[in-house]
Image (cartoon, rainbow, N blue to C red; front, side, top):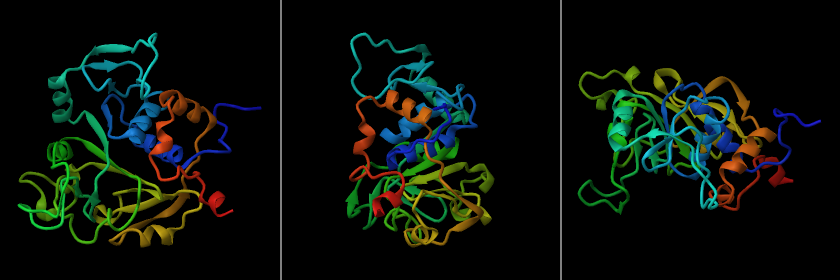
Length: 274
């Protein structure tokens, strides 16, 4: 007999990562959740519809929703569940008051949790690769909680030394703004295609807390450009339940999640090996 908590027998890596990322918002209460990208957006929706019904989400335009919108085109009969107006000024009220949790996808992350989405190589005035610019990263990272979502865990993302350009604050004493302490910085989970980590190691060191099925600790260490701490007990990242997969499918009816990771691999690497 199937129950809501029955573990799914078949699931993709994207779906595993969505469920892992949803855990980042589980205990937030009434804060504004912002998932940047398809998989983080679905993760925030999953959390709102399961563990944290107090979570706030917008329609990405001007309304706060009582239920998250599905991704992609919707039928003509679809009516979004508006709760109240949520214009740009009210977004900033949430940002500056700390009542927001964003899950972002940096191009580089260093040992301090500093992140880069702006430029790679060269100099500040003339980088080798120009990307987005720092955008909202400085103010967001100082004002509220952030988590990181990394589709490809490797040493080009988790870099040795500092990021080429530091776009967001981290646990680096040398770069703390005046009046700030390390404990004022709030970086939560790091969800990658190999594992889940946090910044609760010694002196806010990046720490491995779970391995995705079929991934080894040695693989994670080799793919990270700086030393990481290892939790006393490293668990296997929990597989999605059938109920969670049903919600994910409802929030992503066009299966956009299947296009986010190369070849849409299974969630359990051991199935690939077989």
